[in-house]
Length: 417
Length: 200
Image (cartoon, rainbow over all chains, first blue to last red; front, side):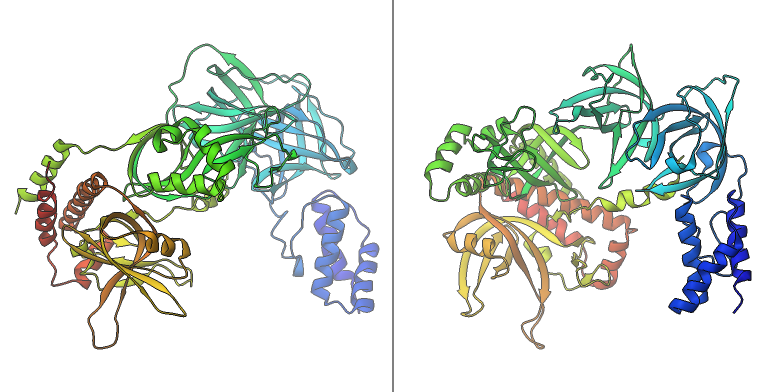
């Protein structure tokens, strides 16, 4: 059997990405698979292609049967960063705007490269032997591969990539976009710190909520030398932050970002919500709960006093909350009521709830049942901040009968009949 | 680097719970058409209201006037909840243990709020269709809540009648097709009577 044709095909494919592989070596691999292991020739070709791609740190080359490779076919034309789509081989010119500590020994360098069209994460493999790039310098990167990890595009610098430093210093001003238009990847924005949250991890420096005229989103800064917390209430220009997506929600990692505090204020929209309707469901986990006492943790503990991070915590603190659904007949809002709201709505104080939890045979369940009986099926009007369809309620009261509304409805119903 | 493909799943990922529709007993009683939205076994089932809105879940407040335990092996409770316009038939079986226990506990008569799923069924081939509500939760409430519910339900009913008159929504067109003999304007009169029963 002749393997040279298939071997040539594979070799040509790698030539496109700047790799020279001896066709004899490829032929040997193919022969072994097909003759020794009875692998179908098309499958063997695919498998050898992938094996070599892995060896050279090139993202998957596709099926490769009969040379019909979808990827890599676009060659290495010059591209703007914003136009680089996953699966493409590209040549770009950009400025290194951030470097991050490599997450693995197989990575030599990682960070963000930007041009006037946008920015993209990049990874230079250790095997690529690429020259180290410096923050603030411009480079021409030829024959890199754009791939995608968790829906976020990134530029892979492999051994076939050539990197040339560009001497001239070109001006680069990132364009900020409204929060509602951010996409997973890299984003620049001008926003105000509207909330600061308890940090939920010992490596976390700060987390909270950023907002602008179009919406809000969560941000996080991880502890790293030189990182500073943002000041709640202040406005910042944030360039080249990592926009991540988790469970359909976006969040910002500011560790790679350039952050500049700014004068001025932003009217943060979205968020402040007023919803009213009937409570149609009180979810498990409502009532009296135990919280982790570790400084800055505050997580809800399981019944066995187990904190997902700090394990068993016998010296927990008690808290009240209600998670439920408030429904106006058109839309159901998920609501989360904090302790003081729960106390005023149910008439059960934290102390009274503690008393019940510790002395009633049903314990914490009894608090849940008593609270549920007080609010389920009743009408309430709640104010609070809405994040991802959940309203964090800070004010809530029963809806009262308005005779004006009654009269208006009578007129409406009787009007035309 | 805006690749539109990235955020395609984003909106779909957020699950929206079916809202609990507000409907008077006399309108729910008229429902005959029930359908599934999708081919899946788990796809939600909807009952189409004559005023042209689908409901998978309803919220009702009225007086629980009767309840009855039925069955031995598969024990369940039936009850009647009365609003100013008519009667809702509710039931809670062993698949809704919490609702069944709640219902078992409540002494009649009492004002109750019920969140449940309506369905159309026939006792046998010969009998006419009935609408019953499978209870998800039930709780004792007060008269104020009942009055608020009448306002709420009258308002939503009038909204539906107005949307029906415009007559462009797919569910409105479906209702016209399914309930050719029902004129939704009759529900306007019913809403008026329900409102008029509230004494201030």
